[in-house]
Image (cartoon, rainbow, N blue to C red; front, side, top):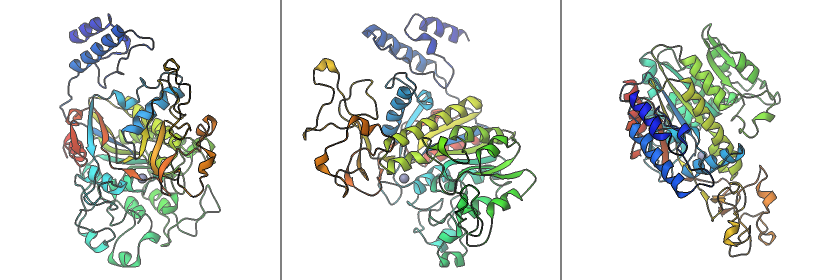
Length: 509
Ligand SMILES: [Zn+2]
């Protein structure tokens, strides 16, 4: 405490002292005010140095671990979302911090799978949740199994951290804005030779005959400990049979051809099990329940579209808070996986706006989790599974709308819209490939690049080079941020599967 008092004393003679704290996570990085002199930047740098010197590692064990996976959230996405978040709140963008920007420990994660330089969510989530790298396209099985080989997969399950946690008496939860059977959340509780085997209709008949089980069934039949305690996300169709109408979209049916209503089976497991599918029931659900919440037939809405949803959907932050409230009733602790699944989907559509908006919602969920948990007993790791091809380009002036056209600083006398070699303006964000390609069939190149109003439309696709129907993933490293017991082990450049080992060590599993 003397150290803290001394630290505050030292800092208060310097710029931005009120934002400094010795408590982890480190307070927002001090920055100089907008019209700062060189001295103010120097002082802010000194404050940042002090904050680092005062940082102490939590070397003890964790009672709880929360793994946040921002699907497709590479460093460019984080930087752009940080600027978007600040700008959308009417404060500065570049100097803004997302919740996890203030976490004290950061590393880079190498995202390749055993057979792909540029990976997918199945292989990468399996690495983080089982501790071993494996092939793209498979769910928590060893790399020796070829994708789709049910027979080989049956004998090659890689134990997941959720299985170990349940076996040890901890509680477990999975939360995602994607289908809860989609690759990332599935890797926590399922083993599958193919990520697409989300319901029984997706399994080839040979796989069914050989004894492979679809991913939705594996969630409901999870047989470690007392089963998965909380599962919140999309993907309702994979749990309902084809003769049952969807409650929100009555013209749609379930996807299961085995006649099983897995949502009803979940609810019938015990007095405390419950199935919900809309926001009102979500808000009313008491903390003691083992909840299966499925809020859309497929993926949940993008954050940008969530207010328009008919039945209402909880935000990622609300689902995270609900999961923590439920899981923390177990005195032995818990392991929770939270995925922002649609950062990736919007990138695939070449639509940066929705991707940044979902990243903003993800950062909000991390903030809620850190505030709802004790830094001394809960390790929070925030990372991504793989990158995308979005870049932040040109020389836009500081404060330029991150979703807008590149504008330069007027003082440099170059006018507000610098043109490229073809005489046309261009956006700060763009993609290397995707449906927004300038070479796509439906693009009239003579029409020129978009106007300032076009690019701010929420459906605007940033321009891309190579025409692909869906923008692809990127192969760059992704960041890993950590706070809490064991967080200091997140450092340097790591293979992605090391994240599992840090989490398992923190939980002593
Ligand atoms: Zn993807």
